[in-house]
Image 1 (tube, rainbow, N blue to C red):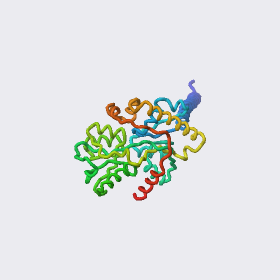
Image 2 (cartoon, rainbow, N blue to C red):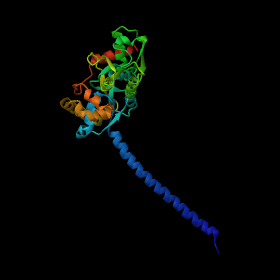
Image 3 (cartoon, rainbow, N blue to C red):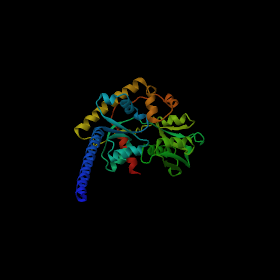
Image 4 (cartoon, rainbow, N blue to C red):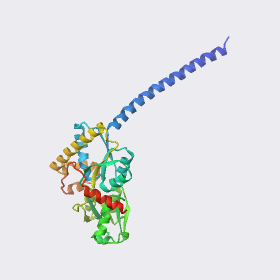
Length: 310
């Protein structure tokens, strides 16, 4: 005689066992996945995260990374390429980057907001005021009632105002539009959506090759705001300090290589990280890069005084 009650008990036991086995299997799989993630997260956590821009002053960092100079120094580094200085700032403010490129004006503004930043080095960041080829603008005086693309509270904002004041234009009649993304700034200028734009290298040379005019060149004026900054609270332990030492050594070695072989020798890296044409790279003027060196205190005070008025 079929004992339904007895079979129900057996089925319940079997079903319960299957559930327990399934749970155990899921736990084992979950633990394996967790172990994998932990190892990856451990590497990411221990690596030095560096926020960069598609600009020529970042070339020593790109060369040190691509030519394994960082690796030779046994430095685990993760590059975080961004299209705008504001995005670099966000990475530094949030702590996802421990080191990054900036400018003295932007960095000073963050320091005022109690972001724990220190200056590691000056860079040879260069800017030019470029105009679109059909705007009939040849000098800074022609920018009356015109539109210039900048990033607010940055070196570009400072330099735009410096240019306006240098020819005694009314600041209120020269409109400064915040276009943070460098690629977008270039496209808007080339497409005649802007009258002018403050551009670094190699973007300034790129648009000049597309019939834009270099209306003002700020390479020679005594305001050099390029900077590499550190999150001081994230780089104060002994392990991070050792990473910064390795970064400094690798950076200086990369600078020596660039100065020895020239910009064009590293054209493939400029193309990869700065998104410019080969013709632009061929047109770049030679420049000498410098080793890690302190920011000139004069530029820090200049930025502080400018921010006091804004």
